[in-house]
Image (cartoon, rainbow, N blue to C red; front, top):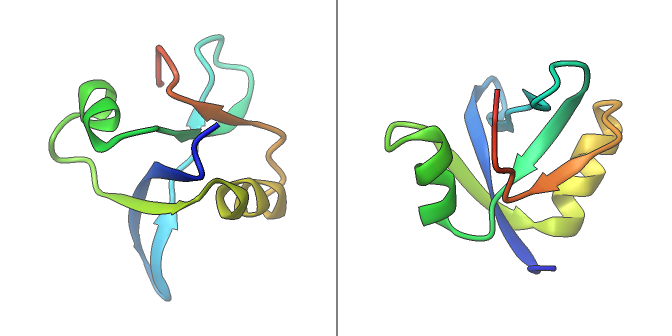
Length: 78
């Protein structure tokens, strides 16, 4: 597992916020995390804002948001 991951983000009132996405089956929200900027751009495009965080921080943020999954380098992102 990578120590640092790239996660999609959006502007928030207190700084960037990590974006969640539905899993391919459309039934579960998860936090997508990518092992490189190239992987994120390949899945979400050049205009997707992103932040780099420690994987542990991404997992903690996901848990705080009530999510059960952080998906590393997802093949599909909805």
